[in-house]
Image 1 (cartoon, helix red, strand yellow):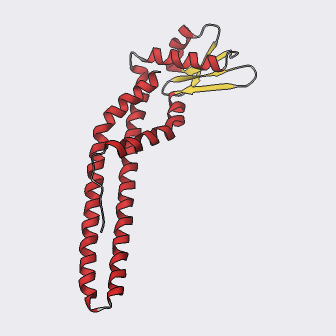
Image 2 (image 1 turned 30 degrees about the vertical axis):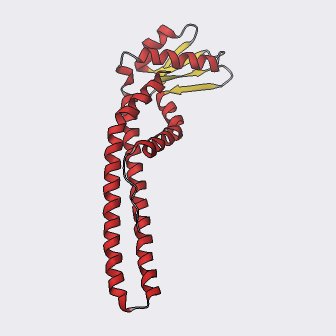
Image 3 (image 1 turned 90 degrees about the vertical axis):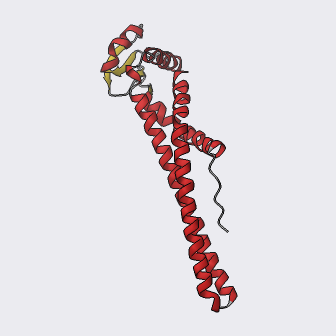
Length: 197
């Protein structure tokens, strides 16, 4: 389907952004770890006169805090990278209407919606799609009442509707996109794991 092709293309464009975010994440995590190591070493030195168990416990607390800070930095970098990817997806989807592929995408959305609600009698669209919709509507009454990046809504006399807009599809795909993004980061990040010892 055209939306899957678009998402694959966006994934490809996001690789470079992801690698940059991974490098930043790794650098940030390493900086936190190095600071924690220095702090731990200073603490160990400072507490050299204290009983050994106390010194080791204090050093372990510093390392544990550093691990938490590093994990938080990684989570923040991942979320920032995902937000960036999602912004790119939104930008591309909101501009899809101007592409030469849009009539094909609109047709696919209409066919899919008609298959799900064959007894529909009304095709609701954005006013910018009214002419395109009229050319594909067949026996459906076209009503330009939506404000959307693209797509449509079908309605039947029984009150059932099918909303098949680009925004709705992106919202429905969010969890799957997030999972695919996380897998890609884990598989191909190339970033070194940061070990705090």
